[in-house]
Image 1 (cartoon, one colour):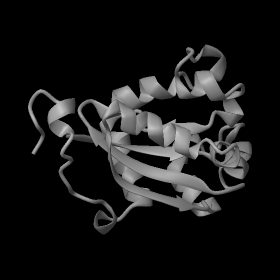
Image 2: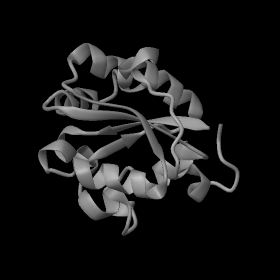
Image 3: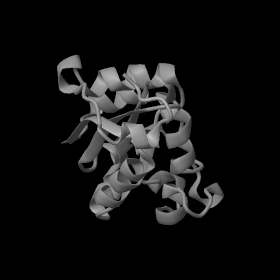
Length: 153
């Protein structure tokens, strides 16, 4: 099974969307293998958004992502990276379809509620920033037989 990193950003936390967002992923059938609330500091923001350091929007992004708590999660499931990205919707909420998280809850790029890894490689890097191996749970869900044709082991 594949894993991805998901972060409910400060605006999602402040707007009381945490439960709604987690519920969508659970209803889809994904398994939460790690979750915590944390306050990002500048160093963590730089590590997460390393590819954007030096770009014109980076300072505003760093100020925003460190402005309040975030909810960090690791989700597991078949094709979870691509599926979570689709569920999140386009980065620019103006281009995010109805029914997606950003399409339903966001208006501006700078307040787009959620982050999801864009590849398996990015997921591995991002998960390692926020979670130690000991913080991730390995378990089998009884419902797996009702979600997957062949139960994951």
